[in-house]
Image 1 (cartoon, rainbow, N blue to C red):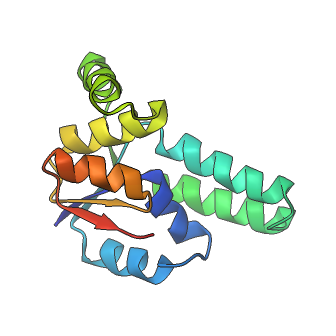
Image 2: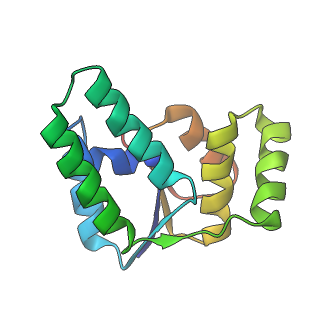
Length: 138
């Protein structure tokens, strides 16, 4: 199965949260995991924020970042090009969706994934409206 993981869902692989176990099951079953060109940036930012807010210690932050960078090489990525840009702009116009969410959703749509996985309820609703089979991990 070809799975597109948005940042909110994939973060659950690195930080123990509600439904982290479901993320692991989905990743184990996936033949290909596709992410957007901004996913690494968003997850890195989330990890750094957790470190600065003292939710995780420095050694844990560095360890998780190292794992993320290693595993990032294994994920397929959508290329940031004019097609992605146009689709993201159209989604903003259609749904008043946030910038980064528009890039995530546009990436999923271009990926031709069999399942879109997110932990964002609004994004899941937009994805379903666009005809994507969606797994919500809220």
